[in-house]
Image 1 (tube, rainbow, N blue to C red):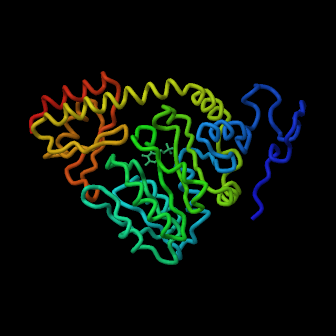
Image 2 (cartoon, helix red, strand yellow):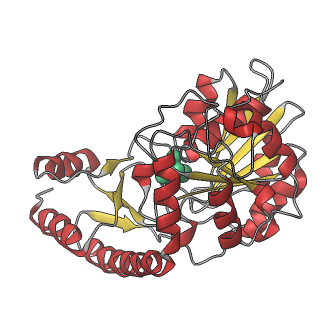
Image 3 (cartoon, rainbow, N blue to C red):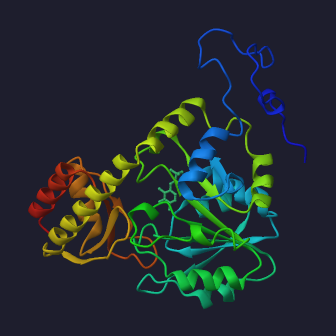
Length: 331
Ligand SMILES: *Cc1c(COP(=O)(O)O)cnc(C)c1O
């Protein structure tokens, strides 16, 4: 497939008169199409992550990366993907959108990963396996050895979604990327970096795969405003680290207080910026909070999450509001 060649793809250098793209010459700088390769931003991210630039792909959120993996790697009607559930809903949505069968393997009841169960579901038509660590909505990280066993035991691509890795105690799998050709890692600016509004997802993988993905993406998938805001955000690592520290402190405080509520059966150990809790009557708690203007996520209909609610860790003030509401809830 010959990709669309944009005006800015064909030229790199330092010209001063741009009459090639039918842009409006006024309204600088927003009149100009952004860099379709996002070279500057990729350089910054590669440096930050300790990777060669050729291993970095940027998408309109992780969601674009997930969709492009389906479009590039799966033959609809023939191939299938494997998800390990419960997990992030977007894998299933993209599978359906792309008419690709999805086989679901459950986590163990303690939310740990059973690598042999995943390997048993793999056959020659498996094209992608999705692992999410730390996992949404269960909030735990998957064991490193179990993930590696899967990566080493298959011929297909294994995607490890690390959207919450900055909150995790563990380092994630990025350091293995260059030695494992079938590993794809997703990270995002939407969580720890506080930039969900700009939509910037990072997909790290072998350059050979990225060459295919880059051909299929829309030419200007990352806007100029996003590139600029991302560069600015990535400049302030201290700010991000401060946010993470504050969120982790709030998380542990919130976990302790939630555990003291009589109708809370369990607060699961979290390695992310949210807590999964098990309560007696999840929909009653959910509606009670909603009527007080506090929105959380009811995950009680998700397999293995019976009775469970997912609560994002907010600011100290927001968490206080949540807890004072929960204290007056009458089961
Ligand atoms: C929030 C989240 C993302 C982030 O998606 P973006 O499109 O980058 O905002 C990715 N994966 C998981 C599991 C998430 O929970």
